[in-house]
Image 1 (spheres, rainbow, N blue to C red):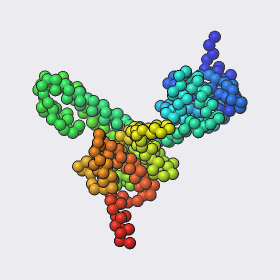
Image 2 (cartoon, rainbow, N blue to C red):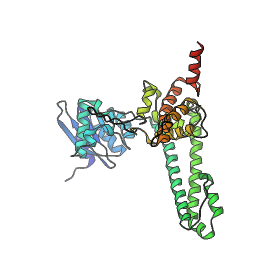
Image 3 (cartoon, rainbow, N blue to C red):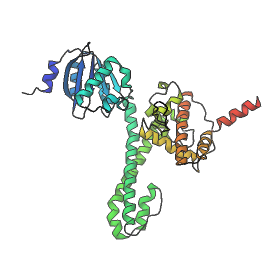
Image 4 (cartoon, rainbow, N blue to C red):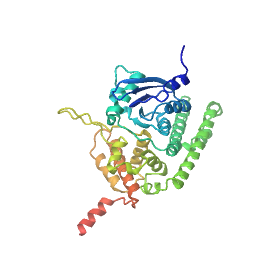
Length: 365
């Protein structure tokens, strides 16, 4: 007869483990406990729900629990920490013994996590989750991004539908698209796409609502965004996302560490004499990287002002070659990520041509 979840928890009440690995899934999570000698002394499943995980966490003595970063890891790590455990959240992209295993299973993954936590926790490449409040604030930005993507897909759908019938909608802003389409289409086509246009209108309203909430958050909870928005090309959205993704400026010993953290530095695959040139690593937060690259394009674009950042990008673009402008924008975004951290930490006034003024001071001396 299969034992219930409550019976299994009761059986293990007061159990002591040197370390525990928890492989998290949407419904059931597998856990494996090791004793002081590194032998498996307990293993079972627990429901991936708050009450069940809390009951399980309280049923074992405080210990070291290792989990992988994922959708559930923020709330699970907070919950198990409240139960008195020390929780390590490992970076799955940097644990090849798990991610590239040829005999992968939930039980093996849980045991591997327990062993790494017990014997060499540095191999887990521990990450630190942001606070619950910061996570909720960041979700506003992510929800806005998802809404913008949905609107773009619907706009492209309408354009393709109209084009298939020999008509064309002139280029315009996303906010003006619905009115421009309704003015230019005949009654038959308008009847077909009218529900889609209404959906685009509602999405636009949602985006404006999110923009208002983001501006309010920046003013009330994150006033330091004012130091970041000094740079033309960095708006409130990018500045707030930057602060929320990094979490704490003090976690970086140097501003130069931010570029690699956001995946804006070249990846490396060096072996022996071979050290091929590779593109950026693209590790870290994808949305934040996209926002910074978008700012890089603005700085290099027709509305960008003369600055050290712009000159740096123009020098790279002038070298020519394949994707020169794209590489220049990425290089600018990398320098921008470093500069934003510096302004955040120091609260200094931004000087667009700092290198030029510095050179002039040296020459005058």
